[in-house]
Length: 481
Image (cartoon, rainbow, N blue to C red; front, top):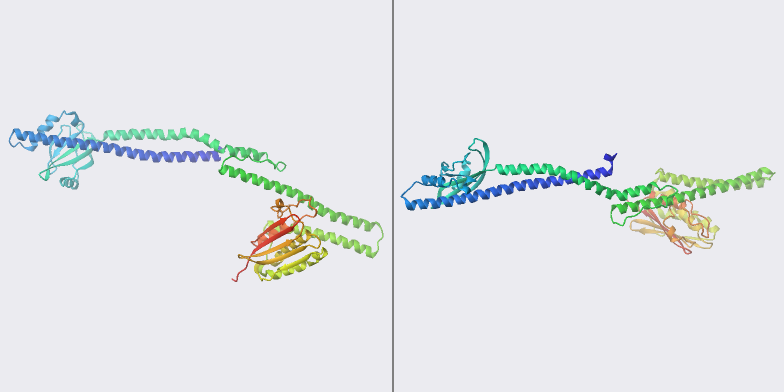
């Protein structure tokens, strides 16, 4: 399991990146070191060639002063014989060529070196010097590679002779092989040794995550108040801890709301059942007149209707949750739909002597399901009526607002605490029971929000205790297409 863990993956990536970095560094070092050694060897050959040229020139002028016309070849051979044991020249091989590329004279140990290319030699005759790496055979008959410097000597404006100085590059090759050997040993050894602090670094990095895991293991449905320690940093670990704590808060609210809902729904279902049972038991216990039986049946039907409303609301919410609520989308005159919703809610408003008015002068067309949208607005209006004092006011208005239809339902009711506005649309949330009005919002607001969401709209709420509430719905406006 270790090889599948994030700890191993981080360590593996760390070592792979370290290996890649060291490989790049080693390649640059190897190439740079090779170039430095070759340049150093070239500087040595260039210095020796210049020294040879100066010495030969001086020697020739000395001989010319002592004797008459001694051939240049003989003078050069005499100079080589005199300088054969010179420690400066023993480190390199020297040969002097004529302008045709033929050897005039060479140091005794001069190996056989393949002549330089004809085109390159023509460049030399034009006054350019050159460096080449050529194959050759040493005195012992062994094949070697040599670094050769070719330098033209110009007298009276033309090339008089050519000096070649050569040195085996075996030492350079040996140094490069040694460097390569060291790099091949050090690179894997460095990666392996770096793996030790890498393990420690991974452990330190994942330590806060392990702490979170230990805390999360102790969190249960009965222990949702436990919180993850938030590190004093500004990194992904802190964001993860904040996210977990937010999730735990939501779960806590969800469990609490669900428990409250179970209690509330149990009470809502139990009350009509008890009343039905009492009425039917009383009706069966004595003879009743037809009018009394009709009254019992009427009350029983009312309680059955309460059952139906609760169950229907639960089914609607379940369908929205599972995206199974069928919507018949078509073009709707929102102004006309709101007028019908207001008309339907006039009777319950009249029972509490509440003035229900609307301001719907502008015609607004939207795409939506007429029945669902009518239910949305009737739920909001019913909610406003429910929490508005007698002789209060409920006002509905609608107008265009930046590509949306903005519909507001305001009341002069009891209002809500500001800290509860965030949760009133939650599925099982119940407004504080300590309020004067003991009724809860039930499932109406949750259904209203689900309908708004399914129409790509949104719903918001504003409220002040004792001053009333304002619910605002935003729905996309339909444009001719």
